[in-house]
Image (tube, rainbow, N blue to C red; front, side, top):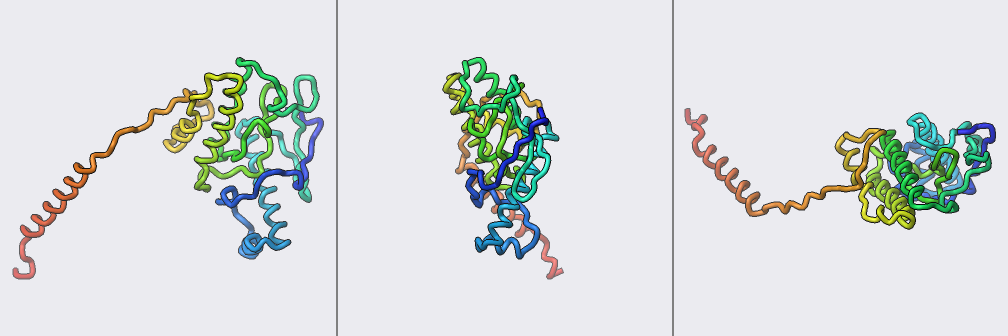
Length: 246
């Protein structure tokens, strides 16, 4: 990705919502800072912004190392993050995905590329949390994912599965307007299921189909098994030698 024209992003230009669901699993330096953030004091807001900045920088470095198409970060100083400028094939600043006209083949291609990026992100332990056509640039060689201050740790955040599902649904909703065949796909559930099962790899081949377990538990059989176990335990107790009498 070209690095001869870096771009900067001021913290004040961000549009994400600092929801508690995004902050779950994030660490602060000490208890004083944590209390200040909870109270919403001026110092607390400053510390909160620092946490979000650090989360974005950390995510960018981790994802770039994992082969995810994100801008390469360089430095974050006083709320300004300096990173590579993403450009198109002509060397101009890359447009956002929502500003690009797609045909069906392009939509399917970009959708597949972005699903692979989502998989690679999850393999690196990260969920974007706010992925949509508005924070994806169409750079030289394909889509590039941007805006990661709300990125979450997949293992430390209890809403990770929900957020990943939402990210993937956002992609499906957008690309299905150009490629209707995507409307009934279930890539989010498939990806998370593979992740939970320890089977997800960066080169995972996805089908978009999920086999749901529609088996209805036989409650009567379960209760009968419990009752038999209780009776067997009672019989064993009755048949035990009277140790104290001996």
